[in-house]
Amino acid sequence: MEFSNSLLHWYLQNKRDLPWRNTTNPYPIWLSEIMLQQTRVAQGMPYFLSFMENFPTVFDLAKADEEQVLKLWQGLGYYSRARNMHKTAQFIALELNGNFPNNYKDLLKLKGIGQYTAAAIASFAFNEVVPVVDGNVFRVLSRYFNVETDIASSTAKKEFTALANELIPKDNPALFNQAIMEFGALQCVPKNPNCSNCIFNSSCAALQLKKVSELPVKLKKTKVTNRYFNYLIFIDVDNHTVINKRVEKGIWQNLYEFPVIETEDKVDFETITDEINEKFSDKKIMEITQYNDNQIIHKLSHQKLHINFYKVEIKNKLEKGIDLETLKTFPFPIVIHNFIEKYSI
Image 1 (cartoon, rainbow, N blue to C red):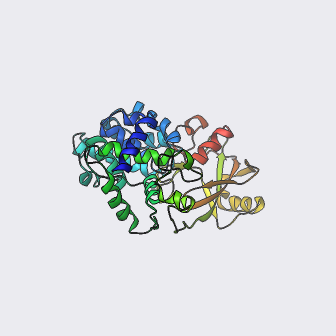
Image 2 (image 1 turned 60 degrees about the vertical axis):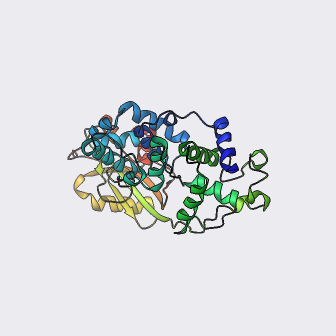
Image 3 (image 1 turned 135 degrees about the vertical axis):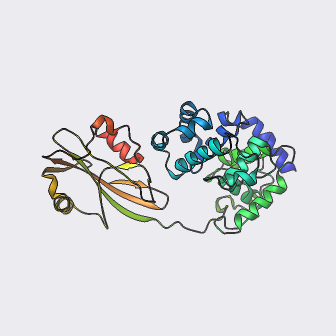
């Protein structure tokens, strides 16, 4: 109980003023929790404000076109979050008359809502006594109580949830959940936390045992796959280009991109131009030039993309060609969006 009381006291003195904390309306709470998965608050805040401005209610989000949702999400990454969020908004609007489920168990049934997000909404919007367990909570509890369980293991979530359940005050679960997450985000940070200026510096087991940098334990390494993308920006006699929608499952589903040749390894200019000329011989290619001097590296959670962009000027008109202003209205992966902006495509 001393841990919880100290934590709540710290939170009330140090908490950030965030818009989704000033309400018990589940809609903005849900939006913020989906956006802040794998995303820092500073990065997610402009997106949250933009979504609330464009879609002030769950009905507005449900009525939106998916491409509009993806365009607003552009740059936030993990685009399946946006697609699931849109589908869930439609389900809540059409099937539940705009009313979110008011408990953890039913929230879990919604698309894109896992244990952490369901617990966050249930406690913040409906004051249900259910603990949140995210990366911040893993870190705070593992250090304070010297828990050496590998947080990537199958049993970790259950173990840490049970521990958090013992600590959460039954009369104020929302405040406790906010407090422990905020403490992990601001004070008990992953690297070089300021332990000398911590309210728990006399009781934290990791600090006493000089194990702060060793906890939490995470042994499982993510295997990263290298992929090599060569994007082709066709420009025809009308100064039109062409793009395709990625419909297959995998990265960037339902976003747009230029025609691409994916190679098994890095290839030189001569090799890729030979392949372009062979593959697109029907397009009457006049000239091929490379936009970027150095290969662009774009890192995803499980993939490292090596990207080059090539300008392919052709004599004839492109079928389904679009002008360069219209091009900018489509939702692209951020690496392609940045390329379009940089080279004024």
